[in-house]
Structure formats: structure tokens, C-alpha cells
Length: 579
View 1 (spheres, helix red, strand yellow):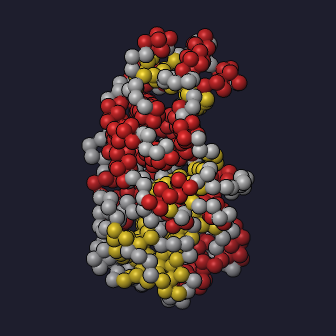
View 2: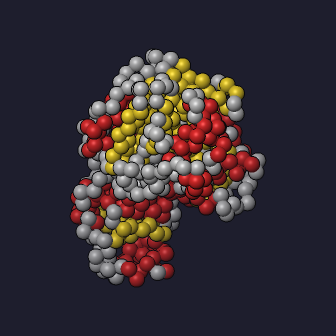
View 3: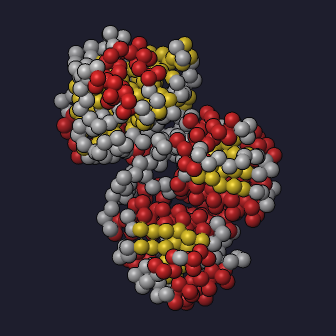
């Protein structure tokens, strides 16, 4: 769950690497470092954010280099544990994303042969193994090292007195960017957008030998051709554009990203796959799991499709019986647990569909078909526009199975999303920012909406929050309700409105302050709660969207009130590429 970047070409590498790491910082931000190559390897690495320590790298120069921004797995955040890591004589440097599962055994063997380790990381074993095999041919040394590694990796390696980068990947993303007499490498496309539109997505088992004017990709020792693809994102999409935070910018981009995803539609192959499915299993993690669960409620209630939703992190170890279409939902397309589940579904001969925001990502290469979201780059760690874009893709599937019954609602939903962005939530923010605990409750599809609201609140404001199906509060959580414990309830017209109103009254009887989201004009609900936040009285699908966005705004402004680092919440990374 780290970010790596490499450059070789006609420019001074250091500014390119630093800028690239800034673009990747959402993947990890407890430390960073770069290494450049000339007659010797120069290394600078530092704990903390890049903006706080980049000046220290100013003395490094060269036309080739590698960089890394870290989310710690092995060893605490420290200058020593930061990447790049070097061999004993500091003639070889590597950066790595992933986990080397057998590093302890390898480290013992290397120490027994006289190697001196400086860090606690798993990555350092790679540098020492390359050192043992290096006789001036970096490609050969890397190729000799890779079979010894168990686990996942995206690796960039450089050696002194060589104008070459060797890149390798297995179960961790790595993309090459092709420029004019220069080549880039990175964990994803965002560092490349400023320099090129042409990219190559390396596949598992690929090794790339990169020099300033060419690259060669090998797979199992043979030269292979990987297609050059054109990307349609632009660098402006990765800038704040005057907003205080990326997260706020991305919240406000949701009318457009939802509209673009709906407008793109579903191609004929995906359409046939969806229409032939007798039942559907969705596999996802985190926010994607919440969108999948919302889909389950909508699909089963509106068009009677049996739907099961599974956590990717559980699927590998407790695989359910699989029948019918399996859909993997992943914003990054690189979520390790979801990819593993997708591969297992394919091994059981299930038709598979990926829903992702990342063209060329691993899930798009594993799945039989892909339904691409159109959210564009999402830099904030907390998912916002990718969440509603996932809902757009999944709602299209519901609409397809319901023979276009919701065409009008979906084609105009972006207007309701735009209107709800103007909603004032300051009273609710004042209440939540003073609380140690907040409950979010709803019924039907608003139960996963509540779970997502709670996730947003806890991950960026650090206020403990839990999402529940409203009827479940009586089965234990009622014991925690006090006048200092706000409850955020979503209560809209429908078959559960009456019982939901009763649940709210029961919570009020325990003195819990109630923040309620209900349709505009619902005076009955407004009278029984402490704070009433109106959402448009529209179709159920649109209400799911507008309620979700209100909860995003509530979490964002609460985090700002508490002076949290909204875009880079502690201990988290954007793309979870390891188990």
C-alpha cells in the first residue's frame, strides 16, 4: 500500500520523482525517499510528508532515479525504514510495494552469509539478494532474485554506473509511461499525467528492462509485447482547483462523475452477461462493500434478483458456494482481497464482471468483462465520487434488469446531487464534533448508506461511529445511548417509514439527540427530532444518492471543525494492495 515512481530520460530525475511522489502520496504518507544514479547511488529519505522534507533531496542529481512514499507494514515509520533500500556497499537501490512473506527466512540466510541489514523492512532483503547475483548485469541479477521471493511485489531497481531501471511486478500494480526520449514507472497513472498519455500496464510476472530510449518487457524469460494504451485523464483532474481539500473538490465533482458514468452506459457484452444471470454474487471491501450491499437491497426489492454480498477479505478463506455472475467492485482495481476472490470465482467457471475506476487495472485483466466507472482521479483517501460512481454503475444494472424502468430517475439524478451539495449541515456538525460516539441508522438500502456515513465519520474525523440497521439498536447498542451520543437517522417514505419513526422515538426516549435525514416537507419527522436535514422527495434510487452525499458533507465538515488532516487520515492508505 505504498507508492513507487521511477524516471529515466533527458531531465534531472529529482524534480520528476518528487512531483510524482506528491501525486502518489495518497497511497502512503508516513515517510518518503528517492535515489538517483550516476557514478554512485545517491539516497535521501525522510519520515513525514514530502512537502515537509523535499528540500533535503535538492542535492541529488542524475538522469535516472526511483522514489517511494510509504505506508508502513514491516517496521515503524522512521528514516531508516523509509525506502529506497540499498545493498551492503550502497551500489544498488530498490523501492518496493507489496509484502515479501518469506523475508524472515531470507534475512536469516543473508545474515548468515555476512550481509548487514540496516532496517526492519521486508524490502531490504531484495537489495541484498540482487547484490549477491550482481556482476554488472542488473537485469540478470533481478531475474535471479525474483524466484526466491514469496508474496507480492512491484519493484524498481537501479545500480551505480548504469543508466537503467529494472522493474518487476507480481500481484502489485505497476505501469510504465512512454514519453519523448524518457520513460516513467509508477504504481498508478497519476504521476504520469503531466508528461505523457501513453501507458503500458505490466502484468503479473513481467520484468521490464528500461533505458532512456527504449524498454523491453520479459515474461518467463521471453520478450513479450504489452500494448501501449492512451489514457483520457488530465493533470488538472489531480489538482485541488481552489478547494481547501481534495475531498471537498471530489464531493463537488459528484454530479459530473455520476452523469458521466450513467452516460457511458453498458456495452452489449456486459448487457448480455447481466441479463443471463440467474443470481449475482458481489465481492468487495470497505466503501465498495457498502455500495454492493445497497445494490443487494435495490436489486432484490425492485427486480427480484437473488444477490449475495461477500467481503473480499473473508472470501479467500471462507469461500461460499458459487453460482451465477460474480461481480468484483474495486475503485482502484488493485484491491488484493477482491482480486483473489475474483480469481477463485473464475477457477470455478463463474462468469465475472469488474466494476472499477481504473482502466487497465488488475481486475480488468482478470475479469471476463468490465463496467468502467467514470469518476476520474480520486486523490482524497476517503472515497466520495468513486462511491457514487459505483452506485451509478450498479444502478444501471438494476435498471437494465427492470427493463429501463428507472431511465428518467437516473438520467436526472445528477441534478438532485448538485442541489443537495448546497445543503446546510452546520447544526449537525456542531453536535457531532462534540461527541465521542455517533450512531448512524437506516433501513433497507439506507442501512448500507448509514454504514458508509459512519465509515466516513470515523476515518476522517476520528470520531467513533457505527452504522446499524435501525431495528438492531434494541439488540444491544441501546445500552450506549446517552444525551452525549448523537444518532444520525435516515427516514424516508416507504414501507419502513412508520417503524423507522418509532425507532427514532425510542432513541429519543433514551435522551439521544437525533439528526434526521428525511424528505423535504416531512413536518411530522421534523417535529420529533433535534435536527432535521431535508433531502429531495424523489425516486428511491436518487434518495440513496442524496442521503449519502449529506453524510459525506457531515463527515467532512466535522473533520474540519476538529482540525483533522482530511485528505490524509492517520494510518490509512487509498489503495489496499496487500492482505
